[in-house]
Length: 389
Image (cartoon, rainbow, N blue to C red; front, side, top):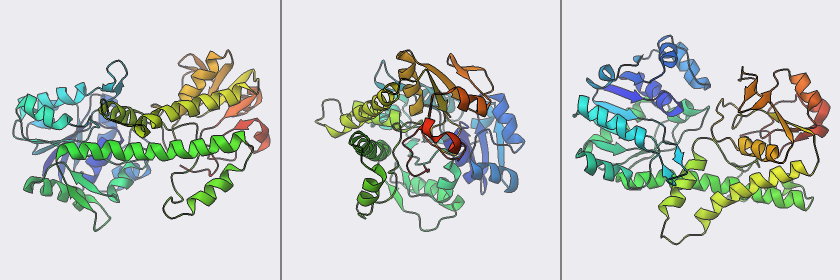
């Protein structure tokens, strides 16, 4: 099948590579540097499987800046443009999705359009009516940053937002590219599929918030947080996963998805959904106060990335913690090896690790994945109890 994927983030690139094993795939982006890298078989993002597949696998994959070239011959077009949360509107900004789909229809009104961007519940049906086009389908993605292609090769489930024969053909494309066999496949209306995405991520955020609040209690009461979590997690109904405390949930998906679901609950009774969003803010404020109580002159921030194995700063919880400490009048410096600039958002970036360790009175680590601070552990403040995720 001739397939076009729009967007070269984790979702777009991992889907393009998965499908390019057995189909003719064109991937479209607006950044020339990214397009050139893909055509040179280099990955513009950090993801081990993406890097490996680009270098070693036989892929029918071409990157382009030309939307006419990308759209005109495509039978299936997958839309993975960003939908950032608009705080003023208290809703996801879906303008990039709408503009892209309007362009597609103008150039090729016969293509099936599969939305994989995160959208509000009810969005796809509304868009189909507005654009008078029945070829628009929603399909949620459940991919982790840094492991996106792996999660496409071994998917937990495939969900297509339509109960039709063409929906089955689309699902087969994703099954065909996967390594995992006997993948659960669900067909449902697009609105229910949109709800699956938001409710899934909000449940994950709930787990993060729960174990963070457990950790807050343990820290305040001077209890061994790890012992309590280990005991709780041995109940098979709870499970020993997604339970490592942090400075708060962050990244590209959980913050915006929880806020969008909260917005979708307008005029619908709820307590828990709203509380999840509030709990994350409380946790970050708690971390700020813990640091401030130690009266440091200089606080060092070790890595801005959201988690181990990712190069993404978007909505990283450490960013709000950093800004909160700065507002208390305490100097903040950053160690982030992926930054080449001397300043990030007006904060000084120190590229020499030993200098960073020396001048910092406290070093904040949301995720501590190395032993580089063994000589100054008394300076390190982290809630990373398991050195993972």
